[in-house]
Length: 148
Image (cartoon, rainbow, N blue to C red; front, side, top):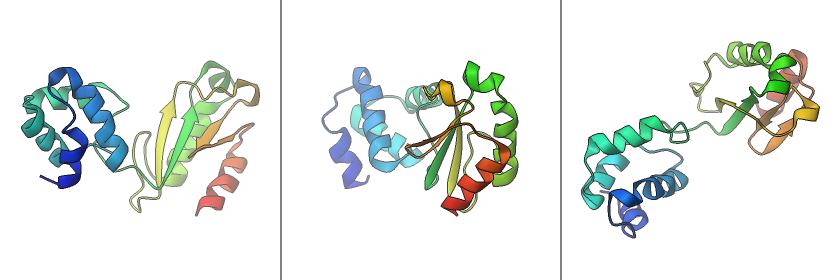
């Protein structure tokens, strides 16, 4: 067991703390690895199947390391009406991955989201913490170029 994970989860005492423990582990490591789940199992005495069940149920928990840059494409109503589905497909083609995946080089992770909260600038996406609006395929290509 890694010392770092022990210190993260040692403040928790059981199943009622599982989600909090998982959130802290993911914040520290960027994802929840199989080793992390085994450590949680050993320290909190929660069956591994229960831990995996929670991790796989909640989409906020990731079992693979995220890319260096997280691209969040909005699927909200305003963005959908203005063509975000086509733009999401364009991103998948440009990056060579499907929604929810990370590029082989570890540079980008593509995450569709329900709403970014910038509906006036629909269609929108975020790269890390920067919001980009009024998107077109050409604008997406320009933005990706800034991160390559």
